[in-house]
Length: 90
Image: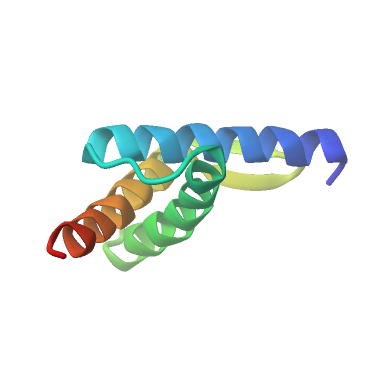
């Protein structure tokens, strides 16, 4: 994977994380948090899709590596909702 492909992958993860935060209605942190949420959401969302036998609907290939856009957004939304519920109670 080249540097440009890595930067594109980071940009896509950041957008997915930001969309997940917007859907959940809870924002904590900035750009780096959105990028982390995008990658964590991709892992969590892909795991949920495999567990429920759901198909990968929208995958982008970056440098030969698949990145599940839809499941990244869904996973990021779940992570943000859980963090929001845990931190609002305090």
